[in-house]
Image 1 (cartoon, rainbow, N blue to C red):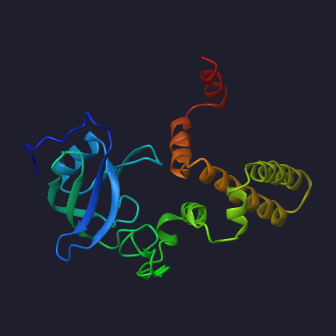
Image 2: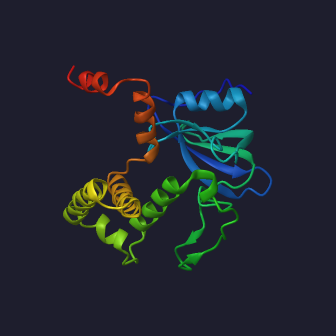
Image 3: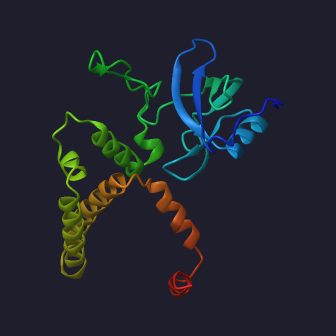
Length: 224
């Protein structure tokens, strides 16, 4: 797949890309492409996007295998928005719903059911993080997560508290308590990441960057 049609990358380095079912015309998701992601999509025939949360290019379905096969690409009149006519393998949304657009504002309810349990695909950390993000955008909830997200001082104090409790458990308590306290700290750390809109994927990228580098070398590199 190739194209001589040019996009206006000068206006913004990220261009909205709407994924639409090529048969039903149902809108499945909206993401963003930079020029590299766009060119990868053209050359491979499968949708690639630039994730603003992960700060990297990702192929749709790279973890789940729920890929998007491109049938056509439409460009708007200003050359700064795309519609991808795609065949969706599996589901489009990381929640397991067919479409990312499943909440009706006027009806105040969900209009799409979850088709697939994605916790097995993405792992508990990513699933928990996205659940936390959903609490962040839900103004009607009174959950503990939402309370933490709306009170930075409380959030920071809980992270410090849970870190201290884990240290105590590691020092002098049984394994079960260590696991319990580590789980508490992980949850509160993920809430902190969600507060800052930092995806756990970026933590994985940093760990991968450090892999094979000794702790002494890594610390020394920070001082340069």
